Length: 259
Image 1 (tube, one colour):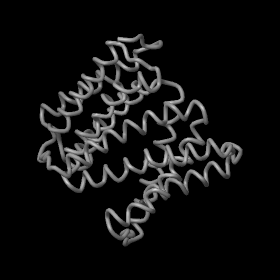
Image 2 (image 1 turned 180 degrees about the vertical axis):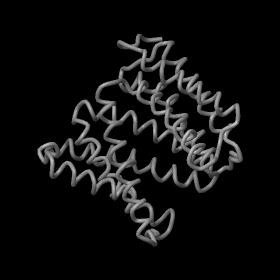
Image 3 (image 1 turned 30 degrees about the vertical axis):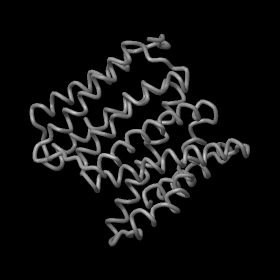
Image 4 (image 1 turned 135 degrees about the vertical axis):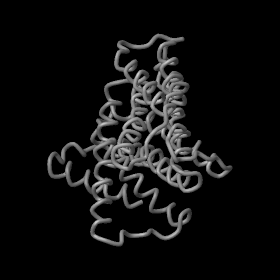
């Protein structure tokens, strides 16, 4: 709850002071962005956190990155963006790489339970819906309006739901904790979503979804360097496969033809 709120404040301050006209919109568009964006972002945030709490980060990440497959399967009928055979193959390659990198982490055990499985799958599906919504909204309303009003909608949704699902909000207990919250909130709920929605205003949903699979690669490398939580040979092979898949997206040009 606090991280999206920090992101919303950061976005409103940055955009409001820099270019307030960028937030001007009609009532219908505002409702679409607040409700559609708010639900997709808010449900994802809850599902991701509850899955992490239930089964840990490795299992959650493994299920989260089912999102590219979900997006590839639904972007055709929903957005008329039918992936060709190459795109489908890239989804499969990237998914394999993510799973190998997750399960190839040293001293980290991936576990699955009923509640964790449900929340993890919901996190993956809601991340896919988040991507599809961004592809629908960003070209129509602009990436700035999309990210600002979606984040505000998510804050409203979380304010209503979080107390009933996770209990009372725990506030940071120190100045350092507040600084970390502000930094992570600004980066993960303002900067990153803006870049993601901006990308979705330019490229197809399946391309953007596959490209986000570079995230566990970066996480694995940073964990190795900063936390001494290295990867096994299998994990590094997985990272290599993800890089190949993401590079393949970068080399994909033109509108895909139907399978």
